[in-house]
Structure formats: structure tokens, C-alpha cells
Length: 324
Length: 287
Image 1: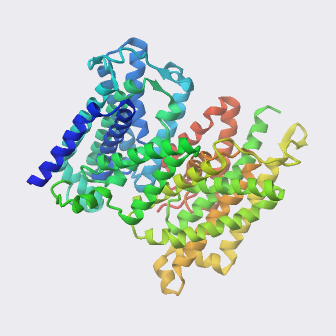
Image 2: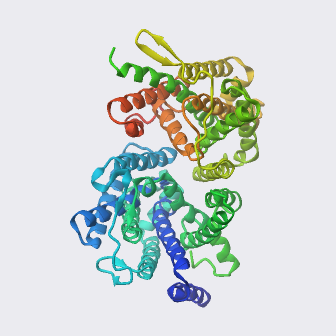
């Protein structure tokens, strides 16, 4: 990493760390939305950006993480972190099963993407009839200690969640970078570029793809579990919504799939513009502006800059190849 | 006669309309190899067209069917010509993303114009029914199914008998060979996309006799179309009808025996089963 790159990273990091001191509660909530989108995008990026396996059903893992942690907490008072870890385990198991079934039966490409949607929708309908977690009426967590900072019990102010999510996103960045430098990262890139060729070189594509899906699913569930304790309410038709799955994939696609910083840049652009659109729409009574922006952004990016915004910005700023 | 028979017959009739909707998707994927993630959204657009035609001109939906089908044909043709043709050789996921974007644009545009509330049409025959012994058939359902079957028959004749239909099949089977033989492949791709869009527009018109329309409806029907096409077998015309009828009947039975809100669960379950056990679909050929 050269000096210019180090400076850019340090500056961005310092801004993010200092932000809560300067912004009001509304902007802080927007920043939290941004961090959630960035982190979930990073998780999806491992599966699609690195290993080339398209999932349009990531809300499934998010929801499993959220519901496991929240339901255990609501019913048994289970320590939130324990619930979150169990949620990750559940999501990893489901992800591994879907991947094993699909890849064993040679379900790839379009069909794999559709299968992820099918499992997502299937689970949504199941949860709508799962009365133990509240069904369609939803599951609510007791809101308490809004001004406290209780990291152990995941109860606290939005500021605490901001720093928690910031740490999570930084962790995902570090993990992605580390993975890409290891053998498994190179295997994934080889599979993404040309799977038969990768198999011919002796890469065990089945297990490598399975690993990518499982890791991505478990990490997504971690995000879902933590956000559940920030939102404090869960409804199957919003948690498991296919539109949420599409939102999860939009940020990394806009920012740049397969890059390290793309999901973060994409999430920042989409969240800020989306919030502006929502405010504007509310002001003038026009619904659907935010979704219109998401759709327009997807079409525009695929037409104009399929590699994403981040590689383009990086080159304009002269940051070079080092910052992927 | 047991009560479920009425539900099965109603499911059969609804299933015919589902079949036509899925057939549109099957034509588009079978010929152009583009995954139309905006299929249900295109249908939703056509349904609003029918509603406008009734509000402004007092058209009966059955009269509107050819009008919206022609309009959607033009839209599909233009979409393929102007946008999608240049994506044919691009990676698959870029097509997905493009169509997901188009779908979101259609949904939100309709939301801006018509608002989130459900809209419906009025017909003089909405509550009439035919009675065959103790079997009761809703008039709207019979009309919708007859219309859908007529459209499918016309389409079958078109692909078997007309020169354009044969040319489109040639482009689907072997685009390079078709181009060598002097066919303008891109133009026939656009025609095929237009035909697929016209199918879903007609299906939307018939479906509007049975359900209300609202902007968020699109995504559900896109998924349902995929479910049906994959169950029946991509690119197979009888497969689309079979898949549609199976899904229609399973929805009817689920609504009767379990709970109406669980009906899609069975469709998705069927899809997962078919994808894993017989990925080419019930009537599909192994690729």
C-alpha cells in the first residue's frame, strides 16, 4: 500500500469513527442503514463477487439469523450473542444444505439463482405460519435502556450499534482481503472465471463453492442477528422479503462486484441517494421514488459501467490497483 | 359430490391462464435465452392498461385483450431491439441485473401513477356462474380459461405453420446456422420477445377477471411464471400448460384443505422438488 492509499483509507476511517459526534439522531440512523447495507453487501460479495455464485435470496440467511437470536431472547431470555451465534449456525446449515443439494444435482446459473429465491419465499411463508415466532403479527423485543451501552446484552443507544456495525464492516473488509490472498480466494476467482477449467486444474469446485455459500450465509446471519436487536421488531414479510434480497445485492453491484471496497461505496451512494429520495417523495407525496432510484441505478450501472462505481472512482483518484 | 371438486375445477381453469402467462416466459427464454425477471411486472403493466381502457373507453376486458397484447408486443420488441440485444453475449448475471432493474422501474412507476391501492374492473357477468349438476363454474373463470386456451392454440399454429414462426424456431435452435441461412437473428429475437410480452399481456387481461391488480403484484407473478415454466420444462409449450394447471390445481387444493395463505408454499415446494429431481422439467428435454 502506498502513501496515497494509506492516506485515503485513514481519512475515510477517521470520518466514519468521528461521524456520530457531529451528526444528529436522524443522520445517525441513516448512517446505520448505510453500514447495514455495506456489511450485507460485503457478505453477498464473498459468494457472488469472489466465487461467482448468484444468490437472489440472501434475505433468507439474514432472516434466519435475526429470528433465531430474537426468538430465543424473547422466549427464554437467551444471551443475545449466544442467540446470534446459534443463528449463524442455523443459517450456515441451511446455506450448506441448499448449496450441497444444488451443486450435487448440477443446478447452476439461472436455475441456482431461482432456487435461492424459491427457498427464500418458501421460508417466508413458513414463518408467516410459525406462531412460536409470532407469525404475520410479528415478533417484538422489549425496548429497554435506550441510553445505556450494554454490549453484552446488545441493548443500547443507536451510537453503540453504529460502532458495532462499523467494526463488523471493518472486520468483513479484513476477512475479504485475507481470503483473497489465500489459496481459497484464488480457487474462488478461478471458479468464477471458468468453472470447468478450474475443475480441470484439480480444484474441488464442489467444496469450494459450498464453502463460499456457507460462509456468506453465516456472516449474513450475524448481521441479521445484530440488526434484530437494533430494530426490535420482526415481521416475516419484511425480514424475508425478496425486495430485501434485491436491496442486499444492489449495493455491491453498484459499487463493484468482486472488489473489496465496492460494497461499501455502493451502499454509501445508494443509502444517501435513497434517503434523499424518500424525503423528497414524502415532501411532495410521490411514493416509490426510492425503488425507482434502485431500479434506475441497476440499469444505468449495467449499461454504462458494468465493473461498478468503485473501480472507476479509484482510477480517477489515482489510488491504483492496490486498493481492490 | 365432495366439496373439493369445485376447487379442483376452478384450479384447472385458473391454471390455463397461468399456463399462458408462463408460456410467454418460456418463449422469451427458449428463443432469446434472456431471463425475463420483469415478466410479472410486464403483466401488471398490461393489467393497468386494461383498467385504463375500461375507465376511459368503457371497454370490456375481453375486448381490451388484443389491444394491450399489441401494445406489449411493441414494448417487448422495442426493449429487445433497443436494450437487450446488446446483452446477448454479455455474462448471464448482467442480464439478470438489467431485468431486475427494469422490474423495479416498472413497479415504482406504476406506484407513482396509480398509488398502492388495489384496482379492479367491473363486468356485467362478474357474479354469474354456470351450473353443471352440482358443479358450479364461475363465468369469469370459464371466459378466462377459454381465452387463454385460444391464445395458446393460435401461438401453436403460429410457430408450426407460419414462416415467421418457423424462422423464430430456427433462431432458437441454432442462431449461427440461422444467420448463415440469411435470417436477421436480432430481428427475430425482438419478435420473439414481443410475442412473449403479448402472451403475458393477454394472460394479465384474463387474470384481471379473477384478481385485483396493485403495483407490487409483479414480483409474485414473475416468480410464479418461473415456477410453472421450470416445473413444465423450459421451451416446451405443452409443458407450460401442464405446469400452469398443476400449480393452479395445487393452489386450489391447498386453499381448500390447508389454508389459502399457504397455497404458494406448495408451488415453491414443487419447484424445489422438480429442480432437484428432474431439472429439465416434466416435459422438457435433457439439455
